[in-house]
Amino acid sequence: MSAIDTLPPLREVIAAHGLSARKSLGQNFLLDLNLTAKIARQAGDLTGCDVLEIGPGPGGLTRGLLSEGARHVLSLEKDARCLPALAEIATAYPGRLSVLEGDALEIDPLAHLTPPIRVAANLPYNVGTELLVRWLTPPEWPPFWQSLTLMFQREVAERIVAKPGSKAYGRLAILSQWRADAGIVMHLPPGAFTPPPKVSSAVVHLTALPEPRFPADAAILSRVVAAGFNQRRKMLRASLKGVAPGIEDHLVAAGIKPTDRAEQIPLEGFCALARALETA
Ligand code: SAM
Image (cartoon, rainbow, N blue to C red):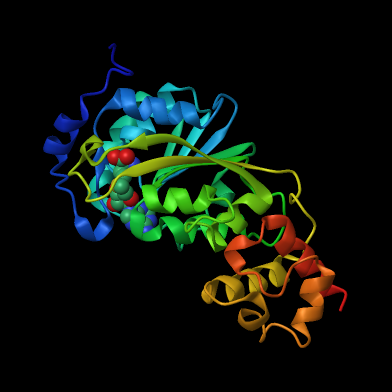
């Protein structure tokens, strides 16, 4: 297959800059540039978009995003050792790559981005879920991003797209599916990464809906879902007891059987319950 750019192969980049992978930073690198370009394509049409990337490392996905036509990529990287390698990519794509060094959980990247904005990342597993939850729970909806294309451990990816009745169904599924369309678009075996992680991975693509799928107050919905799934084996009349007085009546008003368990309730039911509690 033809090269995606004229920069050196990633193995050479890693050797030249001494980028031995650090477990503490969740470093499992993707070295196949055709694979990173394929992941970049899952993010949709990047031309005319700014892309926020978390954890570029030696820059495999960064190069994929740029070769696929992203207008501008802003990459946030905690490991300063990666910066010289990323500077070489910035030189090869003049004016199209900016890198901020630091912890993605602490940097507010918005001042550096111009809409429309897509997010794409082979996330460090230790911060992936936290970032996803933050991106899904901004103070205002629609959010700053049009889409999120993110690598997760396969098990986490399955929790994001899970449907009622499955073991994976829970808070992450409700949060993701309430205000976004979410689907798994790629599966990757451990051997796709260097070094290989212990678990399989999957890429999830989420597209922000213009407004939530069903009306509900975000804070009430979040409280109900957290309480329901914290004790997922209990009937809702017991697990939600502390949420509001007379919870059985609210459940009935929302069309939910008080003897059901959280994992049986579809998103629409949780939203109906949040509305019933709001008007109580
Ligand atoms: N994107 C590269 C690739 O696909 O080969 C690297 C992916 S590696 C799984 C995760 C990257 O995130 C590493 O480069 C690591 O240094 C970086 N990282 C870890 N924690 C971070 C944090 N809190 N903020 C920003 N970057 C972080």
